[in-house]
Image (tube, rainbow, N blue to C red):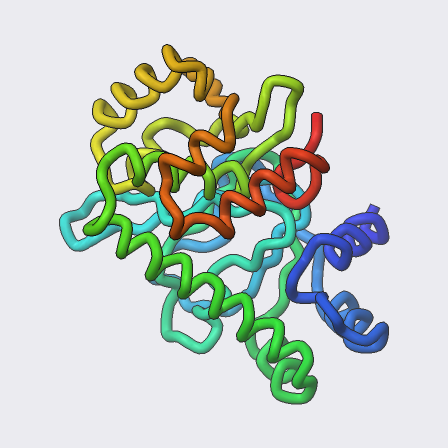
Length: 252
């Protein structure tokens, strides 16, 4: 089983991209495989960042308690994602990561991973690229909060979720349960009722199919159009995944 898990880790991770066989083998050799049951946390906000996790299978919700004491969803993470990678050089994890379904991860001790990155520039470069992409996404989301209307913000979040937690079906891209409307509202910085109202309107227009435990994007090009031009790269990724059933948007 562990051999298959490690093969999947290499096949679907930016961390292993363009590494030599020896470097990939080093990462795998120094990792441990862990199984996380739904509802269990990989780590909690405020914990010392002793471990770095890469998701191999499953889904993880990353949440943060803000200064008002509210829990907000920052991101849904899937196979290939590194959880809070920037935290390994910080004093504490900035968020909590909780398994949404049965989840398999590779785990490295933080000090071991830092030593490997210091000794192998290709590993360090991959980590920098991942951190840079995350920072770009967070900046883009912050800009959306102030510069886009409600519909654009919801559409943008749907595009991101389609990449992070999408399953390609004959109808469109289904956002996997238990990702909820509450997650969508939190990620868009809106109320649950606002999101429900917009989704209901879009369902009447044939753009989405929304139920209590289901959300499917039926018309990806139109959702991308609503999101606006700044989301072109996300839209392209989502559309490509929908066509080929690849990436995080898996085919069913």
